[in-house]
Length: 162
Image (cartoon, rainbow, N blue to C red; front, top):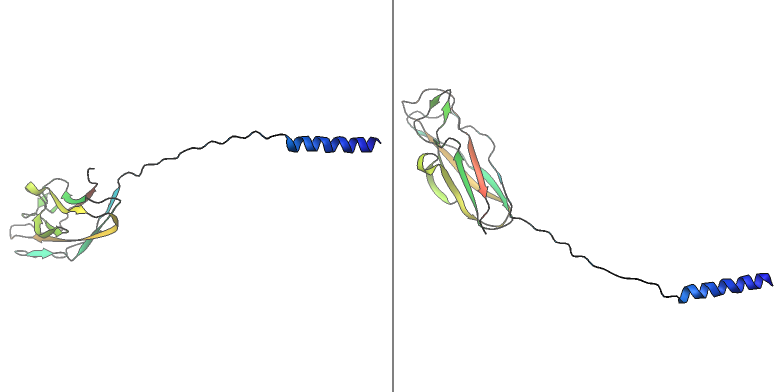
């Protein structure tokens, strides 16, 4: 009899648990994030112009600059840090400025003087790995001292102002 009562009590407790309403509630959350305008530039690897022709002009072959941007309207500029745009060695500076062309610029343009920054691309498209071909030119005069000259150029890709 005790077993029957214990079993009956267990069934009653089980039924009570099954019919007792369970309390529940739900909530939600919104997650936001902002993608900012981004632009990245990859400049050409270092290269040499070879032997510069005295009394003539030496041109580079095609070099490429790659720009990745998540919006349209970016610009690509190239400049030389001191603004002269001239190759130098041990204090000697070539007479003529280095010249560049490429992107929107179809003829050679001096890298120094009033054009301290040359805009190669003025309204780039949105997307990845956009390649801009660039070319360099250096004229050498009979007054330039013999030596191995160099110049460091900086390529800057700038996001458009919204």
